[in-house]
Each structure stands twice: as structure tokens, then as C-alpha cells.
Length: 445
Image (cartoon, one colour):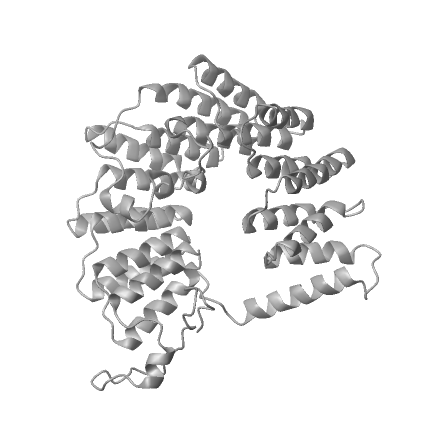
């Protein structure tokens, strides 16, 4: 197993030992040269580094190395491991670490159960989330307000309205008020339900209106451990704003949580009418849309086929002398490609060129999402897909297998010679990625 320099600097790759080492004897010089951690504190540093680099698939390997090294993990180590699996949506690994923890006589506390329930929500497995609550009660671990909100969102992710409203009834009967995260969960549950889109959009607007009187569930919000571990409530409850919560420049206004979730849901539903109703409500309250809300409004217009209104939102923001945000460019480019019309593809190309000219660059996820979307163009010159590929090559961004596979398929559909340099490079990249995925690189979950 290798960490492939995941720890950075001059740390060596992890070298798996065969069998358990003899720890009675002093470590050999060979062992010291190849080992990357010697005690629990050093292993915790490795776990934190892997989690921050989003290489969550390596956590099981690090844990196995701890066992081979004879280093006993304590409660803090298991918390770090389970937080890493939560961030990576790796439910199987999370339950493995929970079982290992219990086998060592360590009883999971309420914070750890919250992380486990949150992981179930990320993986859309409400049955396991409910089972965890039952396990807490059997283990006499008292759930907190955060526990119930984690559970509410885990059920909401699966669209289980029956369970969501049952949790709300339990909370209110226990004297717990509904805060903004509860209303956000109700909106997500309705969005993910099987109800018709028009009915759902109307219900979302209704819930936003009801949320104006929300109260605090607990006297405290983020627990000390969550703050220390850098876990926001938005991440714990799997809200669509989670990855942007630490952005600056007016990207996120945290008091607008319910509006954030509502605008995001309406964009997914392509409900222009509900989106415009939410804008009216926001204006009536004297609030200004933040960048996240503008992105959702653009997304709604563009995915509903109204390129002009989506473009106007973008142009109004850019003319306001506010700092440019790469997400606005990406949203416009991605939305313009819906339907692969000549007008839309031309706008997408122009948008990406302007973005690049302003010194804004695509992240790994943005680039791969755009390449995957652009590769669906069946007619035309494949100009946008080629442009995105070239931008990724210039930034040395390694494409994902699905994106390269789709891009390669699009190239093969066109009359391109087999010895074309671009086709040869894409084919080589695709083969290398297939080999890498085929030979492992972390446990599947």
C-alpha cells in the first residue's frame, strides 16, 4: 500500500509489513527508514493530513499500519478516522472503525454517533441512521438536539417525508423548537420526495415563510469538538452550502440558510416561478442575495432553457464591481451547455475564455464536471470540450475516469485520424486511469 507522498515533503510512502512486527526488540535501521509514523500522535497527524487532502480511501490503510506497528488507537484517533470517513461519504469504513473502537472497550459518545448518522445521510441510507439512534438508546447515550437534526437530514436525503415528520413530532413533543436547520431539512425532504415538482415548489415556498419564527434547538450550536475539527453545522447536516461555508467575499451569508436550501431545491426542480417568489420574499425582508443564491438563480434560469435571463444575472453581478467568483463563470458555462444549442455552446466557450483571461482557474471537481458535460455534445466541432481539456492540461489537472471516458468517446465519434496527437494523449490517459482503478487505490465503499 502506498500513500503516494500524501503526507507531503520528504515523507516516504507507506510500506506494508507482512505479519506483526516484534516490538520487544529495538527498531532496526531499515524499519526507521521506511516507517512514516511511530506513535499515536504521529499517526493522528497522518490521518489529519489525508483527510485535508480528501484522500479518505487511505484511512483504512493507515489504520492497518497502526495495527501492524503495535500502536493502539485511542478515542481521539477513532474520532479523527470517523470524521474522515464522514467527509468522504464512506459509510462502510465508518462502521468498521466504530466496530473496532467498541472491540477495544471504547464506547462511542454522542458526538461520534452524530458523525455516523451524518455519514448515513451522505450515503442516503436512512435505515442505518435510524438503527444508530436505537443503538444509542440501548447504550444509554443520550441524543442531543444535533443528533435529531442529523437524523432528520439523513432521512431527508432519502426523501422519507414520513420519517422526517415523525422526527419533527418527537422533537416538538420533547420541547425542542425547530431551528433553521430543521426547516432546511424539511425543504430537502420535500425536494427529494416523489411528489410532483409544482406541488413541491409550492411547499418549499410555504416552508420558507413558516421558518421566519424559527427558534434554537439547543442553547449551543456547534460543539467544541466540531469547531476544533473544523466541522460546520452545514457540513454536519450535509447542506448544499457546506463546501462554501468558509468562502469570503460575500459568497455565503449564514443567516440565509433556509433561503440557500430553498433556492438550491428550486434550481434542481427548474421552478422559475418558485425562484422568483423567493426573490420577492428576500427583497421584502430587506435582504440582498449572496453569491450562492445568485448561482442558484442562474442555474434555475439556465436549466429551464432561459439563457438570456441567466446571462443577465451574471452580467449584473460583474458590473457591480464586486470580486469575480469562479463559480459564477462555471455556472454560466455549464448551464449554457444544456441542450447543446449553437448559441449556448458559443456562450460557454466565451465564458471560459473570459474566466481564464481574468486569472481564475477551475478546481479539480469543476474541471471534471464541465468536461463531462461538454463531452455530451453530439454535433458541432467539440470546441468547448477541447477547450476544457486544454485548460486542464495547462494546469496539470488529472481528469477523472468518467470525464476522460466521455471525452474519448466523443472524439472517437468524430472523423479524427488515429495518429492525431490529441486523440493519442486522451487514449493514453484513459488507459492509464483504467489500469490505476483496476489495480486498487483504496478500498471501494
